[in-house]
Image 1 (cartoon, rainbow, N blue to C red):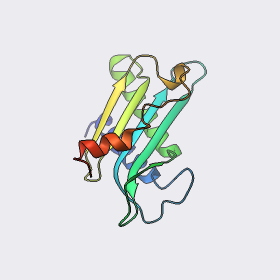
Image 2: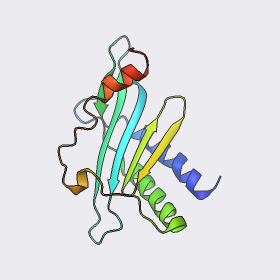
Image 3: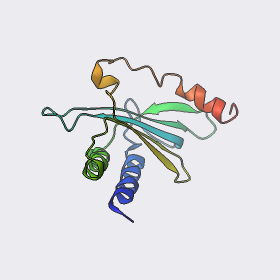
Image 4: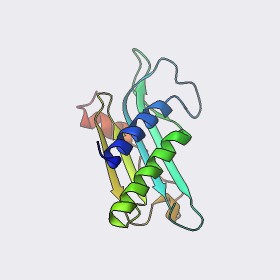
Length: 143
């Protein structure tokens, strides 16, 4: 496995390990159906800064699906930063946004953007994911 693919695998593992760091409650007996991380980074700037939205679509046994926000662990953030460093080393560009989705069967998808990051460009009330649970249910056929 090359360095970048190993960094992807390490980041996914660290993000999955972070899911129990729930913002306003305990993880408890929930199981997750999808994880989403929207990580913005200006680490290449003189005053490095990041911004993260991370949540799980999860449920307690026999309960409805809910969107549960969680904090990334320092390890997960370091893994995402490592991906940026590897990619910069290959093509000389710094991505500014990394969007990661993880499925329980181990599949994952990284998407990168090199333009101005949404939140770090002043859009502090980021509402792009407010209806994500509804969109997910539609994607999965209404369940």
